[in-house]
Length: 111
Image: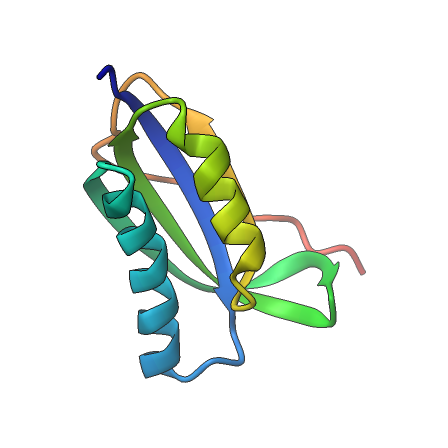
């Protein structure tokens, strides 16, 4: 079965304890593994202020996960993500390669 390389960005609730946040991340990684996926790289981007409030959340803990999985599994993973109460927001993109270094331009604060 053909597998594609994906980049997933996950925003987990910042109100969780370190242990609960770790379990929420494990739930995401386990879901990928259950669909015969393989995790290539996990980047902990840390706690950040959201650009706008989402369901009462003003901050989130960001993770970027690079993983390989069959394209058919993506919709099933998305369904599981929607059921995960600790997951504030997520996005999944198909990518060509895993970057060695991940850099983002800082957001400009609007006064």
